Length: 334
Image (cartoon, rainbow, N blue to C red; front, side):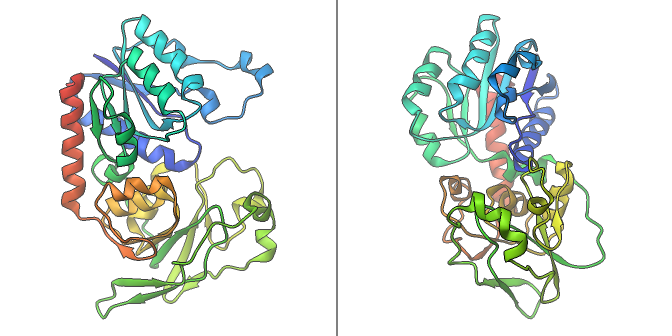
């Protein structure tokens, strides 16, 4: 069979983590299939004025396969606009589709569920329990899965950073970075991060972020660790946003980010897709922030993780990988 896997709808570099992970998982688990990349609807990643949409090339409407695989937080108000026309076209041509590592909200659930009933997927595999609960009663296979970004240690090999000094990764959006300190035990293991538990998003952040480079001075070091600050939003065109913080890191190479999180002594963040890769590679994470996206952390069995240093056991990652592959095979991917 020919299988096309969505891999281009990157609103930020974190989207590449779960999309590459899913692509590699399918390639390794189903080597009998011809698996290739599917281009995503252009409006998912780029703001295109309506009058210029006619100039956009849409290979996704012409790519032909037996199975199409979509992923990510797409079960929202834009789903029927962005994906329903493609799904109708695929079904008319005799194709089937699956939605994996999916997240959605309740606001558009009724309309989306109605569409999915009329055009049922092979499987809807979610990344958090709340999304699964929204669709588990639908008359097609559903699976209470995980975000495939949490499986990168099994699906992606980014190599090592090979830097000559220890560092921590610190990535915050929607607000100023908190001032923090790191406590270690006698063995040199990070056991606590102070100063982040009370962090909250900043009001009017879309305006305040333009003033951050003047209003804040962030340290280059925290104790014996260099502080590296990955920026996930690649769409900024302004240096005062991309490099507002000391040791800002930005790249178009998703695997360099994965290597950075893999080799960091600690990741401090309010970004889900900074936390998940670090946890997958067995590294400690201090996560803070209240958002429905936290369901992907809950799904890994993490508890009381707000502002605390947590790790995810390797056997959990391996088990979730195997269970997802089994669910996809049982749904007809095998």
